[in-house]
Amino acid sequence: MTVRKSDTLALLGGRKSIEAPFQLYNSIGAEEVAAAKAVVESGVLSKFLGRWGSDFLGGPKVKEFERDCEAYFGVKHAITVNSWTSGLIAAVGALGVEPGDEIIVTPWTMCASATAIMHWNAIPVFADIDPETFCLDPKSIEANITPYTKAIMSVDIGGHSADIDAINAIARKHKLKVISDTAQAPGALYHGKYAGTLTDIGGYSLNYHKHIHTGEGGILVTNDDALADRMRLIRNHAEAAVGDMGLADISNMIGHNFRLGEIECAIGIEQLKKLAGFVDSRQRAAARLSEGLKGLAGLRTPVVKPDCTHSYYMYFMVVDDAVTGVSRNRIFEALVADGVPGLSTTFANVHLLPMYQRKIAYGSRGFPWTSDICRREVSYAKGICPVAEGLHDRSYIGFQMCMHQMSDAEIDLMVEAFQKVWANLDALR
View 1 (spheres, rainbow, N blue to C red):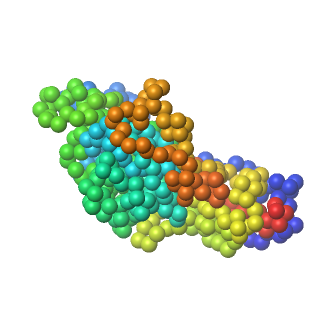
View 2: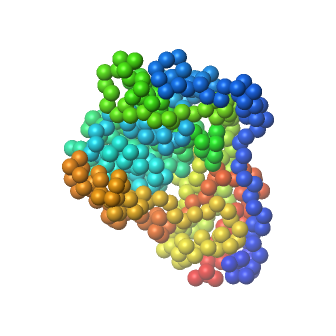
View 3: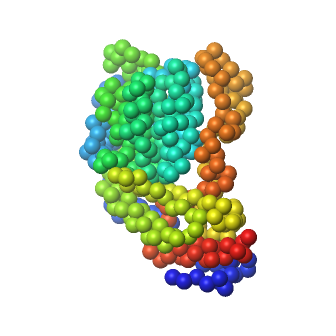
């Protein structure tokens, strides 16, 4: 594919490279339709009861989906929840956190990762990210550990696992627990094992724009029997069940309705069968895109670490404006004008959200930060996470891989648009 400098950018009055919208990703097929129909016809849309007994763990499709997930991911326990946000709340609570405990988390994530910590009146402490994978940097984790640190929440952002061996080593050294928020990386491998299965608790999102989806939902995974029991309790009105169970440790046994229904689980059973194929299709699309973008000076395509795979929920790129001579924002404008869909230049720097900048959460008086449970001044000032902030402010461009079907023809049109923009950098300058 050759793009001539005479091919004027659409931003400057030329023809768009991409004139029709890309086909949206849809992983639902006839199998899911039939599975949902069978549940509706059965009349059993949910079978959870919020008290200890035979229906405390849900209906037949909930249990079947959980057993299938245990077998697929190679874990002892899989626990379905009605959203991954619910899953994170259950995971943090299951660890037995006390109000004021600190949990280290990345700023480069969806806000729920940190909000799940706040839910239990624990304190999020933001560590910086690795400049290649955009996951938590182990060195920054180590630098942010205090006597009050209880756990680390590692986020496998975009589809690539964090450096879990290094993170687990830090956790063992400091006697901390580790949660893997693998919402965006189901099916990704880390040293031959599934991301999300190598920490105390992990799990995946089933939201509509993820690799597999049930509309909303999530799957918690763990090999720890006690943690599994505690997460099941938090999922389903724990305070009403612990007495009949004879549970001694009732800390954080504040129950919720985080239960996933039978229809969603029936769909999930069919979706799980297709996960390997879904991930493979994203990997093939990303490989084609990376090959097409190779050689564009000042553009770095996603990095995949040795002995890891990437499931490509997002396709993360970095623009070096010192090489291009054009700002990231100007390049973004040109790509969007030429029709490239699903691009963004911003990603959450969660520590800069108003809740953390103003330290206003529960009520209006700064709780928990202004209360006695917060045992030190925790900074959320700009500058504490320079890698994440620099990416956000200056160099990051992301593409939402899981929002589109990503046919070869669509990828080739994207490549054409990128090559056209790079061929016209002088005009953008």
